[in-house]
Image: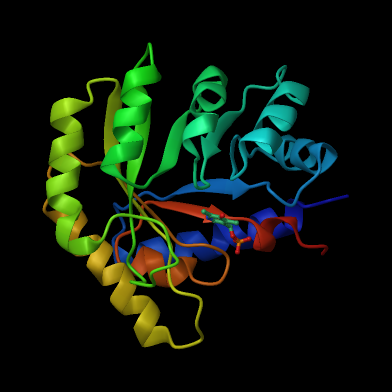
Length: 219
Ligand SMILES: *Cc1c(COP(=O)(O)O)cnc(C)c1O
């Protein structure tokens, strides 16, 4: 399997989008490997990719175990249940993108013996079924976590764009996240953008994109 072409294409598209936004703007690419096999992850690694993301603890554990000899950076992206916190902490993710509530932050705080880097997930699509903190309480929640959870090293925000073909709805959602991000001077990471919408996300200031399909599709 050769994913070099996919990777080159995605990198070229990111490059174009970031230059259009600001030539000093740097965007990190997280390869979302949830549909990929261990061999496919190795193939992408061989082409220079180091940061990978999973959304289920079980898969993350199996893949990171199998690839433990490679210097990979693992990102945890999926909704985390309280009963999986211990397992997640044991895996020592490079960054948890899906801290979706103050309650989850407190549950991690109570169980962690180290400082975990994390992003507060904002529900920018405003659909009840989606996880994340609502925009109107995002700043307050962010500051509460900073105050009462010393074992969580908040680095910024994560958002998932709405699944729609209507570009203006996607733009609206990313604008909401960007506005909150701009009110958090200490925040460094704005994680938004997936295969279908990463160029729009970058045009709204995203500096970390999480891309699965576009990288691992069959060329
Ligand atoms: C699956 C997933 C992605 C990647 O989605 P693609 O459409 O395959 O690029 C990004 N972020 C999260 C949280 C995901 O679960």
